[in-house]
Length: 501
Image (cartoon, rainbow, N blue to C red; front, top):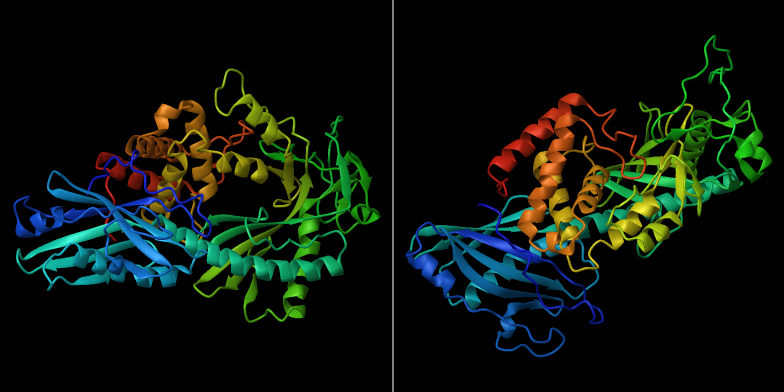
């Protein structure tokens, strides 16, 4: 089942209507075998349901198309391509992000109604096959033609709903834990609870999250002007040779780089010879997390993963177990680091105005190694993502499809070697190389362009960070795992298709 072009397909624009959210078009590919088969003729004669107003009247679609007052489906087109029938439909939900399991259970009923409204043979039966959170395969037996029709719809929205539900549970627990930690140690802040987007929680994979825990008491950051050698170790001994200087995204952090710093940051539990040492900060923070789990009575839901140097916890949610990396973070707003020489000259994407806006958000430093802090640009990257398709392109849709295929086919698992942050970086590089709106109008071409870029980076084990271009995001990744992903991508590019589970 090959990808078909869907860049120009647009459903009813419901974004401006209160209580409703825009949904993406879905493609149902029906393998009809022979064009002249009775089943094919029945499918092709299905009516095109046109919804004039989702709030009130429907042009001529029967009310039975409504599963409930909260869900409805609209089919906009049915046509042939080779020996396949392509059904383009739109799935709308007028409630706020229902749980994925609830929505998944509605889909068989939705498609059953679609068959009935098409006035097909009454003996048609539909059975849900496959995992309920990714792809849906419906087997439909037409008694008149004795031909089996396979419906397959990529449900990107369902992935978003499932992740939203997990994030909701994660941020409640994280807020509870970090509130207790902030009471025990004033150097750490509570991660705020948010009803919308939470910038402190980054989804790297469906079961892997990065949680940045802000620190306080460090104000007025300045770049270090003088270089000095470091001979200390974490155990307090002296080295005969100096420590290696940081490379790529990493840097030293001295307490004197801040105009104001609380006295606690000069204490020996986190400071060595004037440096705020991330490994020491993690030691303090790990003990605080362990104590907070017990104090908050979360021992049955949250557990420490002790075999790792960073602070990782496993958390049970209502749908699955997820792993969270909790990282103490120094937020540095309004300052853009010297290492991030972005953008280079003569680049058309993003615009100059957008660049200045992005730089105004500054950066952050993450405590995730022994001696060096790691620069992070999560907020700046989110601004870029939020404003991707102001020109009406399909960049976001391509990114969502790329992420779905990565999670389902190319690189599944709890801790995949390729995360959504890698895919996001591939998207940014591709947007910069193809800055014109016309290059993002046809979904199939734009999507395959992204896959080719991802394949090149994975094959070469090299993906430059978008802002700090001397940093390779795949430098410490497993070569064997990268090669496995590269092989799967190469197979896909030879015959682009949505693989059946």
